[in-house]
Length: 257
Image (cartoon, rainbow, N blue to C red; front, side, top):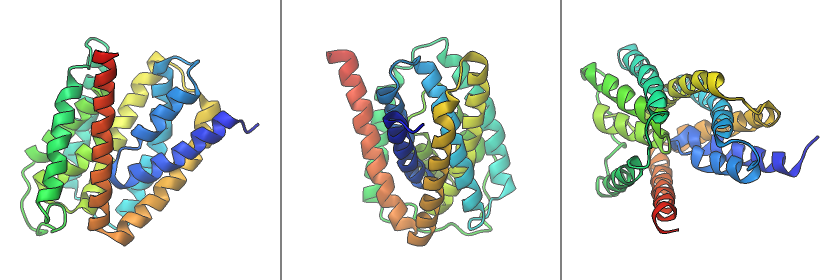
């Protein structure tokens, strides 16, 4: 039976899959929809269900990008291994500590990222040469930091990953999006494994939402490849700004309401 709640969640999932496949930030759309439409469920179970839905779209995105953008094993394997390990560590840490202190820090970091994308017109547009040597510590650093962040806190992980691959490895935005999807897929799987031992998944909502999330992801990757780096950079700016406002609003509610 199709209910109003399920319709809203499926539409949110489609948009989240579309946006997330290009520049990340799908959680800014899908997770609030869960919290708004299904307030009767425990938050942790909604977080778990959100991850379960998101991982399908992320997997589709990673596969679709792989058909157009080559993945180099010397970059992606160290990133995957470190991301998985530190995502588990981050998720474990969040059960012991409050993550409120991270919100101001990452809001400031995102603001500087936004300025970089505006001031540097070549940021993420010019590709690095194929034969340029990339030290192994760079993908390990990206996987470790962003894996821990996604397990511990989460919002904006996809966007941070793209910026890290562009800034540290000299990739274009399209390349950065492709690599970000693989690392994000790894952190999502790690989180799902942990959630499966701690809470339940609401499959009644998750299963139809997966279809919409995957459909949005397929369309998003197609558009990213067709439109190129300028399009991805423009959308990334919008998502980064949205994330800044979201974190700022959370801080306002926490300290002034």
